[in-house]
Amino acid sequence: METLIEVVSYLGRGIEAVLGYLETHHWIFGLAALGYIFYLHDRAIHARFDALEKRIDEVRKRLAIDY
Image 1: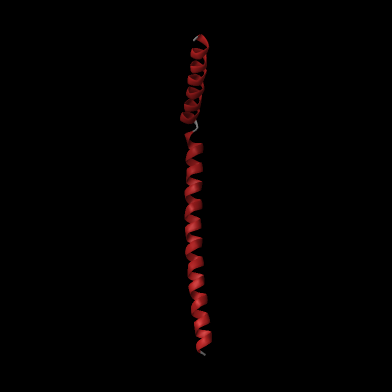
Image 2: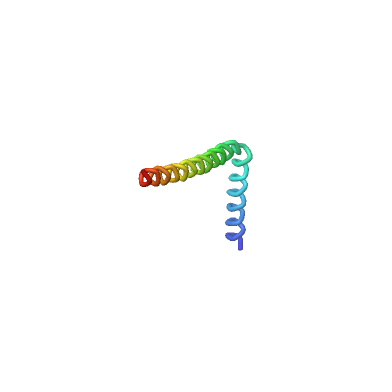
């Protein structure tokens, strides 16, 4: 039983250390989240430009066939 209490105590200390680190270094995770949001936004913009480029190519092909 004493060993079980020691294991639970070590786990609690570990969780407390992790939460303490997050409290003092939360800006690191904020920058990571901001970078990920920028990455998703950049992917969305590139997807829109790719779709627009495909449409333009289709229009050019149709105009080339017509003439």
